[in-house]
Structures are given as C-alpha cells and as structure tokens.
Length: 185
Image (cartoon, rainbow, N blue to C red; front, side, top):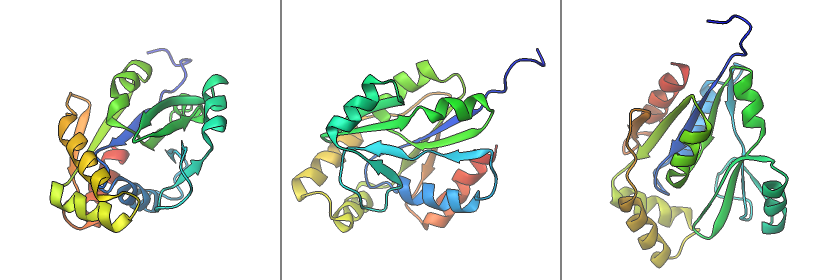
C-alpha cells in the first residue's frame, strides 16, 4: 500500500421507505457520535418548505437547479415531486478519510455505487401499518399520497453485498444503536 495515497472515507447512505424512521435514527446516531470529528452527517438539500423534523437545507426549485448546474451536489434525485441533493462537501470529507452519513434514496443506489468506491447502504425497514401510522402522524401527506408511498415502498428492493438492513419497528433507540455500531465499524 502506498503511504502517500490519500485516505478514503466511507459513505453510509441511509435509505428506506418514507415513514420508516430514517430521520429519527439519523438524529439519534448524530447525538451519540457528537464530538468525534471523523463522523460527518450530511445536511441534504430539499425543494420543500422547512419542517417535519428533517435536518435539511431547503431551497427553491430554481436555487436547486443552479446547484446542479454549478456541480455543487455530489448526488441529486427526484422523489415525490421534490428535488433532493447531497452537497459536494461530501467528496472533501471522504477524501479526508471521514465516515460520511447521509439520508439518501433507494432510487439513487446505482449512481451512488458508481460514484463512491467505499459505500455502505443502510436499508431502514418497518411494517407497512407502522409506516402508514407514522406518515399520518407526520401530517405532510394526504391519505392518497400515503397509499402511493406505501405501494412505492413495496416495489423497490434494496439488496447487494453493500446493504445492511435495520428493522425500525421497535423502540427507535434500539435501531439507532445498530446504526451507530455500523457507522463505527
């Protein structure tokens, strides 16, 4: 191994259906790992008004398109009529050898696999009835939208040697502990 080669970090991309509890687990993991500068949690950009417990940057569609055009997003995608992206700082953190943790989308897994040589995918799952209840409680979607999200969640499979599944149907702290162990490893 060449000692002069730059260190390479790992991207931990947390995915799963809407309502599986990704943001809750990410927030708990971030609290648990606070103070360790080698664990970086990405603040993604979304074209939606702020709110809903997400640790995100919110942008207009026009601003988001400028970010894309200027090459300021490491990954970007469309889902549920919104645009999402991870800022390009991800590349710098990975080049520094950090573990970078981000809330992603199952739809971008092929692109993430092409772009990032060191990638771990965390697929957060929960039973459909629990997800439906969480989506209703969140209050951002109408009943029809919840039904469409549940159907989409069943249609997308996440598999591969780089995938670890975490069941978030129990207490969030238990699933968050699994996520923290995975991030640390």
